[in-house]
Image 1 (cartoon, rainbow, N blue to C red):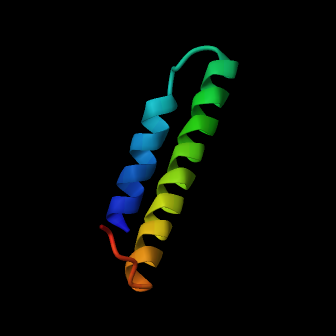
Image 2 (cartoon, rainbow, N blue to C red; image 1 turned 30 degrees about the vertical axis):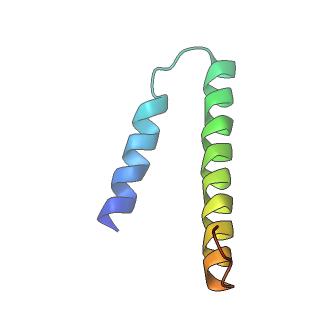
Image 3 (cartoon, rainbow, N blue to C red; image 1 turned 90 degrees about the vertical axis):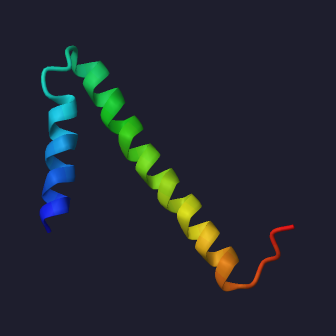
Length: 56
């Protein structure tokens, strides 16, 4: 739980006093898109390992 709160604080601190509202919204959307894409790649990798895919 402590790590989750630390990640939340880092996320909030990264967008504090960023500037124009459009830039702030753009970076927030980009950050969430990056998180989602990371978890999609992680899921695909774990799925390939679980199904016995040969990494040749």
